[in-house]
Image (cartoon, rainbow, N blue to C red):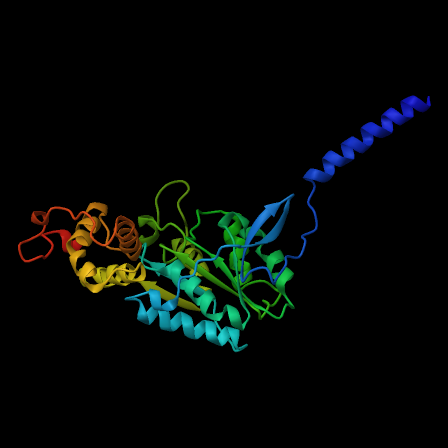
Length: 311
């Protein structure tokens, strides 16, 4: 009998050990001194904050041709760090124009004054209220960063973010702001039917205006909208020069790289800041001289051929 009991107890202990591995654990507070930036990651059913060991060192001075956007985000963040009223921010517009880079640069600017950044994936936004509770009462000032944010209709994370921004019965913690980037101004897909006075069919909206209001209600809860626009050819070349200079090339090498930079943009169909950085990294990696593309692919005057200035 004792052997059977011991065997049963051993099996029960093994079962409990396996259950403990999958059951949600209480979130362990992170080492707040380990880094100015953290990532929210789900571990054992709970959302944990993991310090980012290698942080992007991009500085505000590295970002060119976005001065108005830079000034607005810098002012809002300075207010927040100083304990004054500040707004949640939605940065929208053309891809590769510096939306995420600007947030990283602002972190580097203010991390010495107590600013901390927590990056949260869209799928984990359902736990955003718990995350806000976890940092409430801390002396640091936290920016919750949601990159490349957009939603499909009916996603649970959409409702959670909407509630935290403005709508919950609980007041938001004054040491937390949300900074989000998106290529969509209203974060949700918009359809032609939304512009019609009504829709036909068995399942058509009786009050389509209310559906439109629902779609724009999330973006309206961000107090500050900052828009980014595609770069002109001259702006693109200015950004290229900035990054080539960052990688140590001299003025003569930068001037020699101009035509090759235009061809690089043409081949990618974009003149974004991201494309400029990728070109500069490639050119710097090959050396200051590099192997330029044939000059006849540009006009005799060094200007882009017809169509290139619309990339």
